[in-house]
Image (cartoon, rainbow, N blue to C red; front, side, top):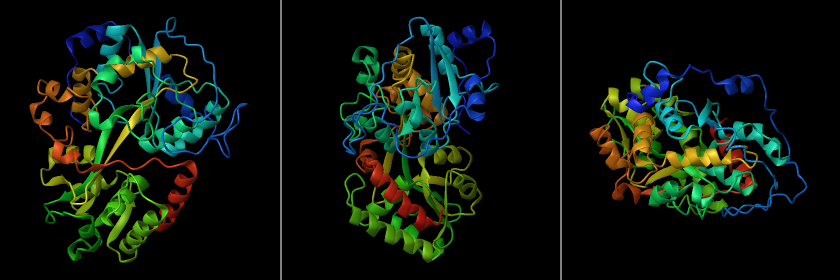
Length: 412
């Protein structure tokens, strides 16, 4: 589990005067408040998507939404589970959000209801295409889905005067990404590295993707990820191609190599982050793994390490986006800006243990946990950054095609 941080004195004072509150949105979602969309996007009286993958927004729905931020001091925030700091004794209390309310008077209705990019997008796309509210002011999507969200016209552009701290403190490596070249739609919540997780208690270190696929002592003791962009990013690197700029022929060649690892029995199975139990127990020796998971495993077992393979690592981000139908956009931008204060960012990173996207947070981390401040999996050094790659944005047609091929190859 991530490390817990004690409440700040400011947050503690606010909590003493604050009743506990259930997250009312989680229940409404579980009861089916959102219908799963199927088929093409509704036209909403405008042109459809233009299919480009450069990050330029297409002519999606031109929604006019009244911003109620001044009179309704709240933000409706959807995120992934276990992805924010929590109080040690009460998981419903998030210290950084408590401090945000103390600072701004804005209440955050926080819902951990995103478990899969495709599933959540499928639940909200029809409403957004029809300019209908989804009762969310911030949603968090991984890079490739953020690209789709922006391209389809579903994201509001930030107002520069409302996100000055974000503009100042966003890490240089995350500026000018292909799907958001002007850094005006997507603010990284956390980033992560994908590398090779190894339990050195049961095997020697693994330095390359080819070793995972061919080393006899690893046969049947290796897992890869069901996340196409991570697994295929590594496969592309293993054939000398750049995951940030590849062709359909490159993808097919990399996929054939992956199929070889499946048919030979080298790859035991494909997983989500449930690989962590097998790696911790030594049931698998090595795997394609996410940095935050490996850091947490390493707290209990220092023999579990994340290796930077010779081919390089994948870098990804989960991004805060403001939907076009958000009714508290100004408040949402205030929250985004708040999390780009280096002290706040360090407090969050100390809990979730992923790559911090905020410049200056490493220095602030020294006051919270000096050991974490020196951890390159949270604050990558220049040498590690030089070996990272970001998977290129895909059109929806490409995404569908590549996902189909990948799912067939892994037997999903």
